[in-house]
Image 1 (cartoon, rainbow, N blue to C red):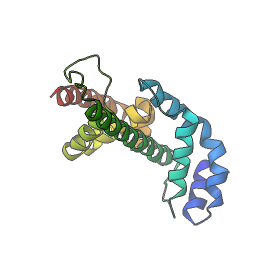
Image 2 (image 1 turned 60 degrees about the vertical axis):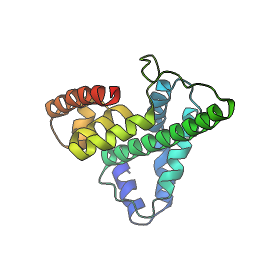
Image 3 (image 1 turned 135 degrees about the vertical axis):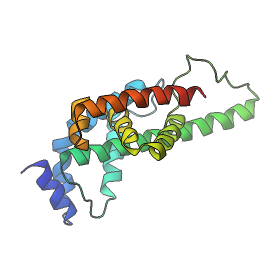
Length: 180
């Protein structure tokens, strides 16, 4: 039985299909989790914990409508993005509350060595989506999904040359946007 078959069974109401699917896709999802957590300066989650959170969010889908394995991994990438952004926002809020309590001065926001703020990246990604939805999806799949240009092209059903061109343009846009 293929991944697509299990996705279709799950979409048809067979909730046990997700339990059969997870052991098959677990390795790739774990790799995605590791990929993103390596970028974190002080990761709060372990890859296994992030993977469990993805599973929990997937299990909330009543009747998912995944076309195929590529669509599934694209959605999983979006879930990882959302989980990490939510975590980043919570951590930033907690730090801000702590900073207010101790009266500390926040670090200079212009410091280029400061790690990338996922909440800022998420806001910029939403802004890009309003300008060019395809570029935003490419950034999401490449950055949050860790997919190659070829994999992204297959998932989006466009040419690798188009993905590369849009990826290059989006990177320049993000540099300008995040610098202010």
